[in-house]
Image (cartoon, rainbow, N blue to C red; front, side, top):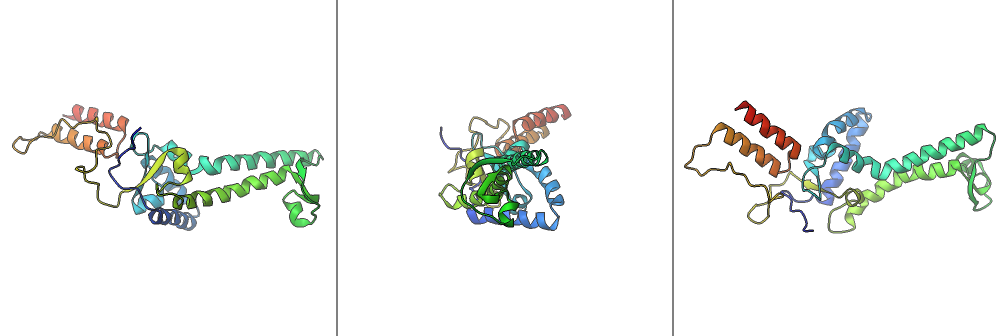
Length: 238
């Protein structure tokens, strides 16, 4: 399958790093609450708060259109953080059940004869892995995987992070001028705008509105359902 040609260039690693840092700063100064509410709003536009400020947007490789809300949720959290976090909760709950039942909760193997309060806190008293040990290993993955994910963009020249490879997405830099259509084919070449008129022909209101809606769809600013609904609304109003 031929690679999608986007109307904007892919964001470079420095630009994406700036968006990630900005997300962290915004989350810190809003105590996470304001940033989270902001995120819930802009995820539907294929952005995070940091990406919106620096004008980056996430697009789907398969269609060349911006991602939907649930795809941003999957991409941002469920891919790398969601599974380790669920495993942490699972192992920690199992450890708590064993504790209240008076069982040892041992799971796995004895790797050495280590003692002390530090090891006991993480469930490795006497060098034995317990359910709590595995819970904290999963929690550690919640911190390590995003770091590996962020650094992955420097690994190849395709400007993709691990989440991009898994979710099949690209991040475009919309702060730059649009690519020339003379050199780049449109995202959806099968869509033609029948409402483009020559300069000598007058353009009616309905023709202009549908032409503008078609341009929004071709540029990836609205999806198929929004485009169809917008056309129906224009026709009904005229």
